[in-house]
Length: 243
Image 1 (cartoon, rainbow, N blue to C red):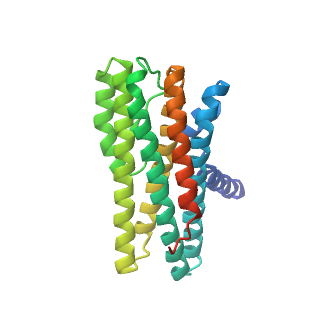
Image 2 (cartoon, rainbow, N blue to C red):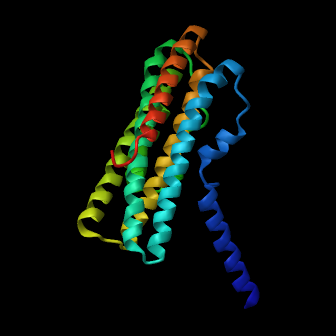
Image 3 (spheres, rainbow, N blue to C red):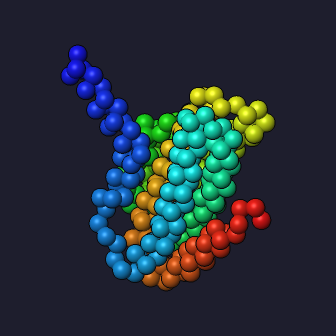
């Protein structure tokens, strides 16, 4: 009996650690396992990667704090943390969307783009993502040109950001109106953030793939656009939340 109890405790701890460290996210593992970029490409990639990862970390911490306050039955503070999370979510959605738009504009200059792995529905948890990925998986199998497949990926990720943001806001407004703190509502936040974080990492993977295929002139143009995007994000974060 003791060994059974000990086994259950170990399983529970492993699940918790996987959730905290997000080791179950395949895009995280692929990003960590990629070889270093050449210096010129790294100079373009690193600022936006750091911005996306910083936003994701802040959002994750805010939501985690909200869960902890909910678990401690401090519902007013839990709602306050959800409000903070909503602002961080909006900033992250804006920067990931802008990154995807920048990639779309440069795609015509890269005749062949090699993507790192496929995006599959099994890696996601929310129903909105699982449903939308079914169509994408079919189209991805039918697309033979690498540029077309990459274009489909960018469209999928942009739509994913829009849909997940819409569902997050819908849940947020419902909680605001009803003060419903049921397990179902909090589970939605958990699933939406898991998928949103994964979408952001898939966007970074796509960006790395595109950088490797762009000619030097396009790389310079993209560098200017990314620098402006990062600077705009930093300025937005510097503005107090109440203003």
